[in-house]
Image (cartoon, rainbow, N blue to C red; front, side):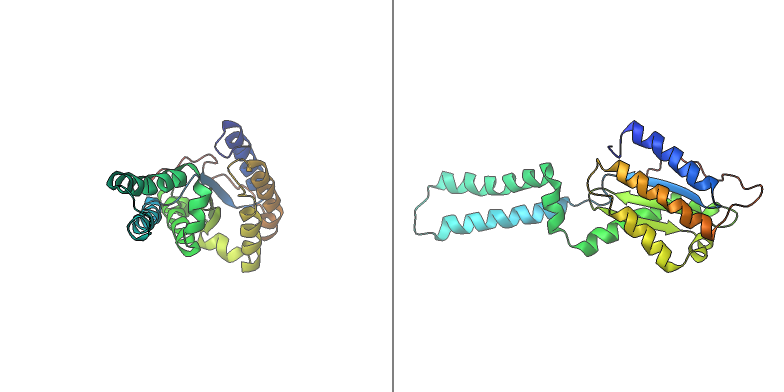
Length: 207
């Protein structure tokens, strides 16, 4: 199932609702295609290929015409630049993991603040943010929720969700992993009498 399909969003809202009905937790799930702007990396690597091509034209023993050197150097830049645009996995492999993780974290924290997930009475709001390009999950939990679960449980939840970001069509795997989190939240944050839903389950957040 495509993460961005209407069907996925409908099932996601239902899954989050069921998860919250078993515990106090307030969960918001946001999936985005990409968290950072990586055009500078595509430009840098394409420029590198172009410079290598120009160097070969200039120093190989074979003589090349001026027109070939000019057009060849330009195409040596354009072709990889377009390739990175049409085949993002190739570009992702060239971007340091540290930078990818940082961009996902920045985006996750920004969405958490803008959506007001921190405004629940018991401070138990949780944002589960997934970024498809980076294949990264970032969980931003408010103080009450973070302190209620052991660090090992948060790591377990993050790892199980992380494995589902195979590609943008692995929405079914994500939903199954999210559903499995219900038991963990219910154990550490059991439902209370008169508990009510403080956050919409289908938040659309744009920065």
